[in-house]
Amino acid sequence: AQSVTQLDSHVSVSEGTPVLLRCNYSSSYSPSLFWYVQHPNKGLQLLLKYTSAATLVKGINGFEAEFKKSETSFHLTKPSAHMSDAAEYFCVVTSMDSSYKLIFGSGTRLLVRP
Amino acid sequence: DVKVTQSSRYLVKRTGEKVFLECVQDMDHENMFWYRQDPGLGLRLIYFSYDVKMKEKGDIPEGYSVSREKKERFSLILESASTNQTSMYLCASSSPGIAGVSWGNEQFFGPGTRLTVL
Image 1 (cartoon, rainbow over the protein chains, first blue to last red):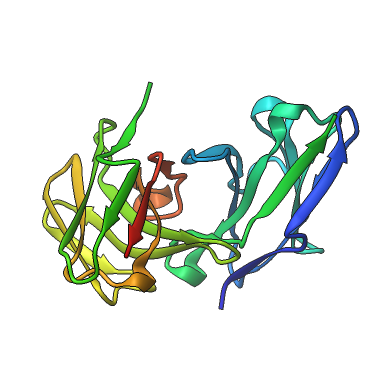
Image 2 (cartoon, each protein chain N blue to C red; image 1 turned 90 degrees about the vertical axis):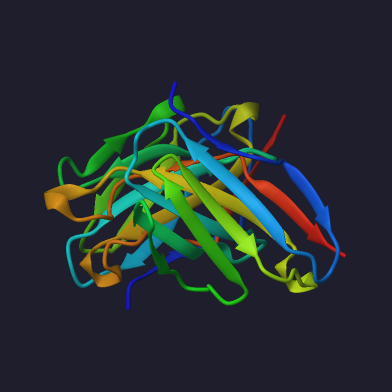
């Protein structure tokens, strides 16, 4: 069965330092992968998506993610954290495994310290 | 600016009440979804619809029903609310995905309705 695992439920970084949010997936077929962000009391907003084109995907607000098939990973990174990045982040996978329904990870809450 | 709107941001109901949550999208999307979001569990799909009057159960449909009479509107109904339905409810919409497959495309989310059942 298809699944997605976010390896950290909470990540804390200092403003100006790099961000790494980890995501691993399982899929028997070529997957599409997404990262969404949710700010407090807001809906989910798409950060970036991978759909079998370039393996390094650039998103909004300076975020990027790299699809690594050999490691079944899709980690989200940003070179320098900003206070406004504090939010919850969801890794999402879909493929023929799930009849193309979106499968959400359990989320990683990012805290940015001044 | 594309939009998915939900009728209420916060709602408080009593056990046994019938509850309606409304969602409207202005993107002419075929697909619409209802999720519930609980801490540590991510988002879980309740129901989805791929066309007017068409609906399919998601992963946790028990205790819920839906209605889609118009393309832009998708309603979630709690027939008899219970305390374990206290949650954040998120509506989303999407266009059909690659190669005509209904799913697999990014979804656009509304702001959510936080429902408390007392």
